Image (cartoon, rainbow, N blue to C red; front, side, top):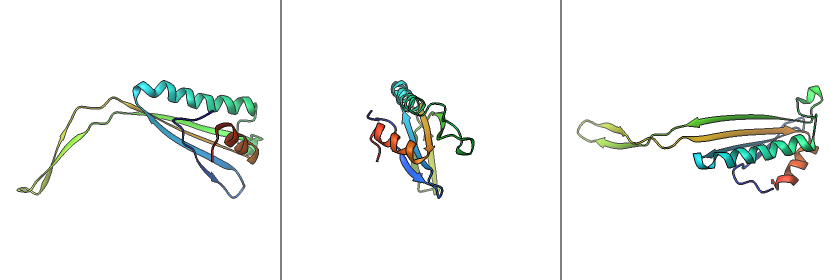
Length: 122
């Protein structure tokens, strides 16, 4: 499966546990597609490694952390008043809310290799 929203960065600790971290931000019209992509990755993980989700010290082969945030940004018109030496900021019209999702997947070498293969990750 090709991922359109999630762009994973990989790191590995001294014990050989690999971690894939991704963050994606979407406009309201894209939220359903973003959520579907995250769900597809987690569905794959649960299907390929059933009953293996959890900390390695408890026998788990993989674990995940999923978080979300919704933000509304308001552009600011900025101007410098040379006479007073101050910045004058005037808020504009708020933009539609953006949803941001972070997903971290970590696991043993077997899980990491399978994840790379399934989603064509570097």
